[in-house]
Length: 273
Image (cartoon, rainbow, N blue to C red; front, top):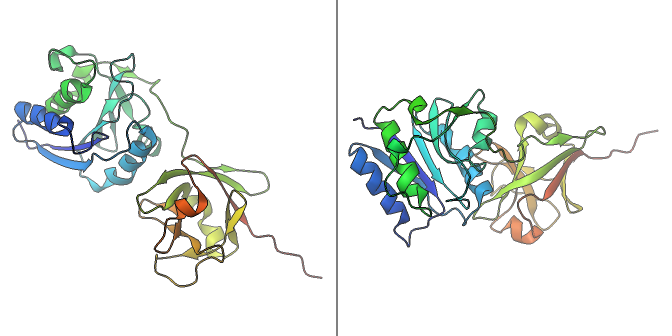
């Protein structure tokens, strides 16, 4: 038994017993486990939001951390339970794309189909695998059970749409909104590796539904927002380019939604004679 670190990320909220039950199962198996709540406020069934939050936070935890994530609209169905190993950490949860952003960023990775019922809580509820399957597996892992004991490795795990934006022949980059945070900041899948040179040269523009945003700021209270209702772009703490508005919700101003297309391009400059 060891004082392993187990994080919890769910859409269970705080009003019901679900998160508490998972903690009770973990501590029953490993009383020395250290449990850290990332969040239980993922919007219900929002796998994309959970995948982004996990991507944004996993690097803040030490090696050998066990991330237990349960956003599971397919609970009780044929969807597989999995254990993923990458970046020196472990990820336990449903095979529905929840871990695919992290796995995309951290190759090589190993994904195991959890099948060994020896480690499940019995009877196994068809509606609460967070308590009866994932929590005991995470606790067993914390106790030193080898990953290979839980099942066989698979390669056909579920993947969400790639984080990589698409660069078109004319140089325009076709990106998208991958998350909207509680402040209404619209987080795109653009990274500094994709567009840093264009922004540094002050020749870039974002376009969303035909609305141009050509102000790029370094902090939220900086003066000089875009002429379009105070919208501007900013590098967020997760490493992605965000569309924001000072003391306002950019998402509300833009009627934005996750998956919405965002174009990044150089401004058109008329040739001189």
